[in-house]
Image (cartoon, rainbow, N blue to C red; front, top):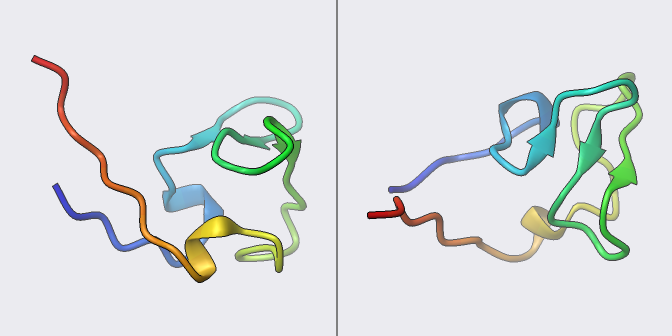
Length: 55
């Protein structure tokens, strides 16, 4: 499955809570700023993540 992510709200690694947190970042569960589409530290800016469906 290929997912093109342009903002955090579309990302499957974003936990939807208050505040929203990134599960892919280092350190884990980094809080997200809702004013930004994608933060500068986002690993998906320079890398790809492979998402596989669990069977």
